[in-house]
Image (cartoon, rainbow, N blue to C red; front, side, top):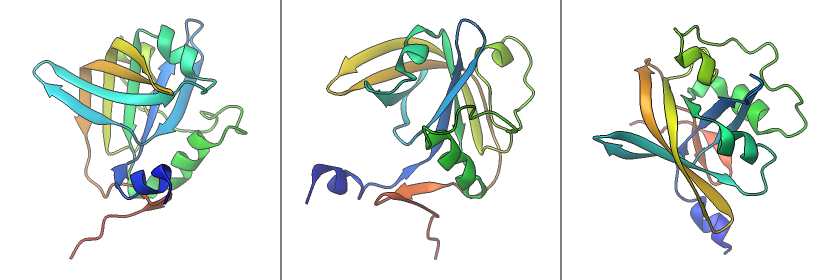
Length: 159
C-alpha cells in the first residue's frame, strides 16, 4: 500500500483557498489540508505543494481566504482543482464583504464557512509549504459539508 493511499484513509473537509496578487488578480485552489491551529490567538494552517504554480502568489500575499465547501459545491471543488481552467473565478459568484476584507481575498458565495486570514508565516518543509494565518474575519452558514476520502468527494454518513 502506498503512503498516499494510506493517508487517503483520513477523511477531510474540502476548501478553496484564495488570495489576490499585488496586481489584484484573484488566485484560488482546492485544498483539503486545512487545520485549526489555535483559538487564542485565532490561527489556522494549510499546506501547498512546492510545485504549485500558485505558490508564489500565496508566499507574497498579505492575506488569504478560506472557503469551506458544502456538499452542493463539488463542481466548484473540481473547477478550482483543475489546472486546465484558466480563469477559475469566471462566472463564480463571490460574497460581498466590507473592505478591507474584500480587498484581500475573494470569498465564494454559498460556502459553509469563510475565513479571511493575515498570513503570519510560510514554512517550507518536505515537498510542501505550510501557511499559517491569523483569522481576522469569519462566518458560518448551515449545510452539509463536502468531504474528501480515498481519493474521491463524498458526503458524511449519518445514522
